[in-house]
Length: 340
Image: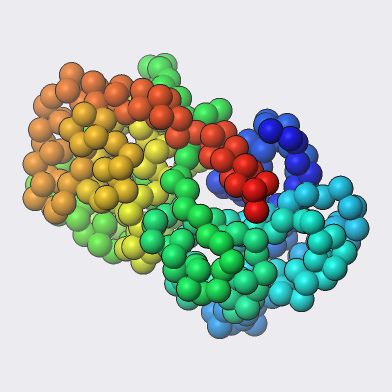
C-alpha cells in the first residue's frame, strides 16, 4: 500500500487521535487541523451550534486552503468538523483536482443533533462518506446527496486494548461485580438503579451522572470519565461490563462493542443484529433483550466464573482472528479511497 500524504481536519481527540496514530504507524504522513481550538463557548457560539451553523473558531477553512497549496497532498479526511464549507472544497478541487476528500463520523449524520447545515450543503462534494454505527446509514447518506457511502464496523486500538494483569493495589482500586462506562442517559440510569435495588452492585464511570450520586448504596457513581490505560484497568477488574447503546442515536453497536472484548473482558450488551454479526451469543459475548433477561444473566454470570472467563477469552480470540483492529479498518479505508 502506497504511503499517502493526508490532512485530517475536524475532531482530533478521542477515537480520532487513535486513528491518526494508526495512520502514522502504517507509514502515512498526517497533518491535522482542529475544528475547535478551545472547549469554552460564548452564548452566541452555543446558539450558532444549536441552529446547526457552528462558527469556524479555529479558521479551519482558511488553514486548509493554505495547507493544500502543497501539491503532494493526496487525501483530506474530514472527521466530523461540521464547519468545512462547500466553497472551500470547490476551491480545493480547482487547486488540486486529484485530491480525494472524504468524510468520516462514528455518529448518525442524518440526525440534526449530529450534523450541521454546512455538512448537508457540502455532502455531495465528498468523494465518499464513511459511516460506522448503522449499516443502513450508508444508504441514508446517498439519499442526502453523497456520491458514495460505505459502512465500516467500529474497531479497536491494538496498542491499547489488551488483556492485562493488575497488581493488587490496582485491582483493589478498580474491582467490581458489574461496571458501566459511558455518558449519562436517563433510561440506562433507571435500569441500573432498579438492578441496584435488587442487590446488584454496579460501578458507573462517565460524564453527567452527578445527580445520581448517593441514589443507592449499590449504585456507585464515580461521575468522571476514564480513558486510555485506566479504562483498560477498570474493565479488566470488572466481572461483567455492561454495554448500553445510545438511544438518541439508535446505535446498533458502539466502540465499546469491540473495545471490551478486545481486552478479554466479559461484555453483556444489548442484543442487536450488528452485535450478533460481530460475536456469537453465549460463546463470545452475552446479550440481553429486556431488563429481566439482563438481571437474569448478571446473576448467572456472577456465579459462574469459568463460563464467564471462557466467553471473555473467546471474544478476545475473535477480535484477533477476525482482525477487528484499527489497522485493518484504516487499510481498508485507504484502499477504498485509492479506488475512487
